[in-house]
Structures are given as C-alpha cells and as structure tokens.
Image (cartoon, rainbow, N blue to C red; front, side):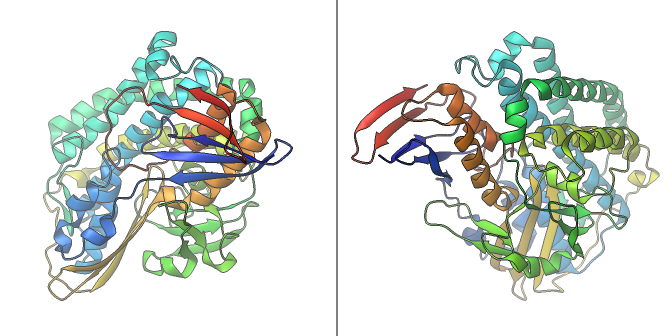
Length: 473
C-alpha cells in the first residue's frame, strides 16, 4: 500500500520548506520532493523603482547574505551607467565579498551543520543544535562564533554596519577603508586562520565516522557552474562563467554575464515556489547543475593562495578530480574560508585601497544590464531592464539556491532510498534527509529569524488516509 512521509518544516535551514517522501507498496522510496512553501515577489515589486535604489532594495532580500545581492545589484547598475568603476572601488568590493563568504560559511558549518557532524545524526534532537554543540565542544563552538563575527566586522568597517550597509552603489562604493580599520582587521586575522585550519582538521576526522553519509548524500553525476578568472583560477566577484560536466570536461567557458540566457533556462513546477534553472543545451531536467562551494572548486584550476591550494589538492585526492558528493560541500566551504582569509590578508597590503577615487559618475547609458557575482551559496545573477529615466521595467533574479534546486531534489531522493524504510519513522533517518538539504546551505526565507526551537511533526499515512505513525519534535 503506497504511503507518504511529510517533513514540515525542514529544520536548521534559512527559510521554510517541507519534504515529501513517497513509498511504494513494498515500503521502498519511489520519489521524494523538496517543496519551498514561501513566496516573496521581489522581482515584481521592484518594477517602477529607480535603478539607483536596487542595491539597497535587493539587499533586503536576505538578512544572512545581503552583501551578495548588494554586489550583484551594484554590478548591474555599473552596466546601466556603462562605466568601469575605479580600481580601488573594485578591490574594496572584493574585500567585502570575501568577508561575506567567511561569515556566511562560518554560520553554515558551525551553527547549522556541525550539530549533525559532531553530535551525530541519531543524537537527541533536543540537543542537536548550536546550544548542544556549545555544551559538547565549547571551544569549537566559541571559535566558530568568533570566526563569523570576524567576517561581519570587516563588513561593518567598510559599510558602517554588519547587515544591509548602504555602501556599494552603481559606479563604485560610498567610502573607503580607514587605516584604523585596516589595523583592526589585520590584528584578528591570525585567530581566524587558526580557527579555520582547526575546523578543517576536525572535518577530516569526521569523514571516516560519516562514511555512509559521505557516499550517499547527493553523490551523482551532474554539471557544475561557477565563475573563474582569466587563468581559470577560483573567482568570487569578477571573472566569467564556466560549466563543466562530471568528468571535468569544459562545456562552456568564459561566458559573459550578458550571455547567461544562452546557457541557463528556468522551469517551474506546481509543487514549489522555487524555480528550477537548468543548462539549456541539455534541456529540462537533464540539464541539472550545481553551484556553490563544491561547484567553484570543480570549475577552477586552483585557488591562487598557498594554504587553500594545499587543501584543495587533498580535497581532490579524497573526493576525486571532479567531486560529486554533496556531503563534501562542507569541506569545500571550509577551504573557501581559508582561501578567502588569505586573499583578505593580501588585499589589506594593497596600496590601491588608499585611493580616494571610489566612484564613477554617469547617467543612464544602457537600458539593460546583468550583474553576476558569487554569493556564498553560488552564482548570483541580477538582470535589470530600465527606461530612459532609469526606472526599472523588468527584473529577473536567479538565486544560487534555485540553481541547486534540481540537485537538492535528487539528493533528497537518493538519501531517502538509502535510509528510509516504512512504515515506522526513525528520527535519525529523517534527520539525514534534512541534512542532505543542509549540505547545500539553502537560503529560502531571505530574512533573519529568531533563534529558537522550530516545531516539527511528521505523519505517515497510507493511501486510504489512515494514520500509521507520527513523530513530533
């Protein structure tokens, strides 16, 4: 008799979603879906606003990663002005974006995923959270909190506040970096580097402990998309798009932002508000691809910084030349923190950051522009159309989490087929399904949430609607 398991809501992710798991008559998983149940509508209500306001407006899409939208929006604004921003402004934007990667990745690893990794997927859900982590591993939890704080402080030094700084604008940035701020950042860098190296060491020891999860959490062939530099190195702000397949073969290379629609299509499904982007040449859904830390590592030749490059070699030795296991998103995230910290250290010594020329002035010179940058969760695209007065007539936003949507659904189904057995529901079994989603670090709500216990009730019904089992937490 066919059955359905509902996980609603999925916990320890940024936003609200649910998972449906469908069992066949033999109690085996026949299908699984990741439903995004919230709707925001930013693309529509931005219409009619001056494009100058778009960085500030779109930054409000997300309280966790406003900097990501700030960067992509400002770059789209640069295109409408048709200017090359001053070199100092570009480097300062890069500095803030690196700080955003550090703080967001630290949140993902230490706050959202570490309770599973350190306390165990089958541990008591009442303790399997950041507070349980603090009790079990106080030094690690404390250092993770401070690492995130370090990234946020860099953002504050540049933009005046940690969340939603009114700083990056079309044509450049509003303010530079003071010598006092530069010294304050440099003083805290050694601790941040030490914390990151320690976390990487901890994760390596976890790989053997979580061998089953490592081989079954979203391990499959897919395409990967991300930005690369002119030399094929890791990129987070500039560069151009590259697409590789699961063997590492390059399918698309150095694709300009304005050409993204040649390679990316968007599909919709009636059971989710999250769009399903896909690689156009292969069609939907065969054109499934992944973005984010794992994808950036798969598309790049090297990091371009010594410590991160050493770790990248070892990561590829463990996961393969092209890494397919989504469980290793966690590993890739930590390596990206390390590389970002190295790049921050390098930028702090850059004399261009002393320049007072931070903004290019111009009017509306183009009626359409695309801004692309790398958010912590993956490639972020802002596409704007304006009228001759600079008022927005159309907006298309392609968010990293959406681009991972097909892969997240595949991951849920793969994990469920390995761990879920009806008709009784095991807590650890369902937590593994959720943890597969957490590996992608999806950002669904695009807003901040209070810390606290999220209610969860999972019910299992048969095809006739008879309640077979219920689990609540």
